[in-house]
Amino acid sequence: MNLDLSKALEIAKSASLQAGLEALKIYYSGEDSKIEDKSDGSPLSKADLKANEIITQIIRETFPNHAILSEEEVDDKKRFLAKYVWIIDPIDGTKEFLDKTGEFTINIALVETATKRPIIAAIYIPVKKELYFAQYNNGAFLESKDEQNKTIKTKLQVSSTNKLENMTLAKSARNSRPLLEKFIKRYPPKTTKSLGSTLKACAIAKGTIDVYLRVCPYSEWDCCAMDLIVNEAGGKVTLLNGKIIEYNQEDVEVPGLLCSNNQIHNEILQKLISLK
Image (cartoon, rainbow, N blue to C red; front, side, top):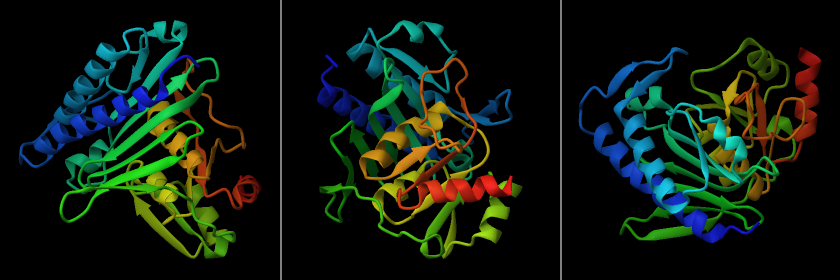
């Protein structure tokens, strides 16, 4: 790598914070920020477009030779020719944003195309003012604010829970599937929680949740940033066949994934396979 990763990380953090500030202005404005429904039925909001504009402008001005893959832009296939590609979800959890649940995030990741893996990641939770970030082989961290609005930096570490019956399992607040419910019924964890967007992965990196199982499709921009953050916190993220996820693909759909504290990751995958 001949890229200054420290600089790239600071750009990712700065872009997510600036986009988050503008998103919150819209969030608290009381205006109906929905513009339309996209072709896949998901909503598009003013905040999606504004956050995307801010993030992509910052990246293009700083790294003009890098490519961008964003949920809110037409896919430019020139990304396959670039050495680095930024994978962005300007607002992950647009439905949560519109419903005012607070459970939405801003996801930014940088992928090295040679390895197809993320090397920089930032996830910002604007309502909580929590910024999760990671640099490849350099750990994962959380920056939050105390009561005096001072920044507190915490190194992230996944939990050590090593039995499914003692684990807290997170599932999507909106995308439950029969296979997932069957798994929970057959192999019940201690607790099940429903959370929106990438809050589930952030909680795993922080050690407050042990496992997140998704058995329906994702897109690369939904999981790329969380992949690096969870791994750098000591956890593991794989496809449901146990393989690592490779990014910057022609087809950006990820068919499903398991995100965990890596204590019984493979055991959970085997149990899931037995139910299919």
